[in-house]
Image 1 (spheres, rainbow, N blue to C red):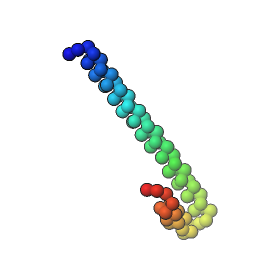
Image 2: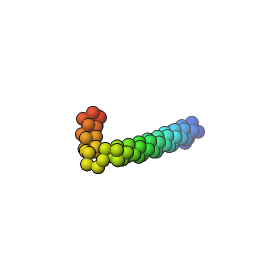
Image 3: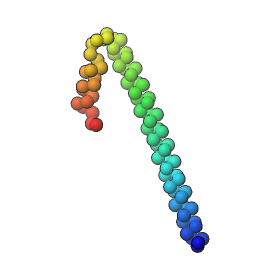
Image 4: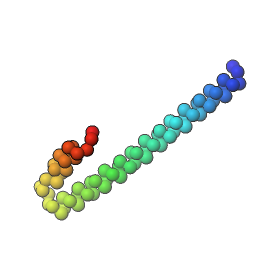
Length: 72
C-alpha cells in the first residue's frame, strides 16, 4: 500500500471521528438546553396555577394555543 493512500485513510478517519464527536457534543448541548427549557416552563405553569387556582384551565388552554401557534 502506498504511503499516500495510508496518509489519506488516516486523514479521512480523523475527520470522520471529529465530525462524529462534534455531532455528539451538539446533541448533548441541545438536549441540555431543552431540559432547562422544560423545567422553566413547568415552573411558569406551576406559578400560574397557584395564582389562578387549580381548575382554572391553564394547562388545557396553553396546550390548545401552543398547538395552534407553534409549528410541528
